[in-house]
Length: 129
Image (cartoon, rainbow, N blue to C red; front, side):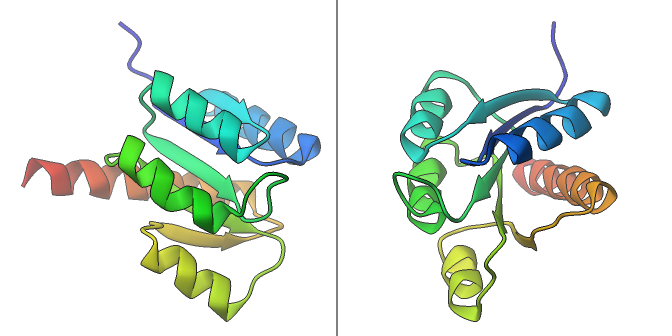
């Protein structure tokens, strides 16, 4: 049985997808990627994920609009919004829509890994209660 945690990385930048995939796989995560919000919704409907990393600016929709839709499909998954264009408005909208965290690019690999581990652990502990 595969017990590796599954992460969906959603970003329209192929270099970001490649980098995050390499970092996460190196640390024994099972990684799927989506380049659009539509693709992310299809994958989320077909498979359970422990976490989703969501870029704010996607080609077909805004990550903050994708977030509540993913929340309905994957309520137990950790959702982390990642943006290269931070703003107070986007941060507040993301957290109000159910994001577990908000990160600004460029993201340090060690910060990303620690955040994912902590958020998944705290979400699983909250589910047990």
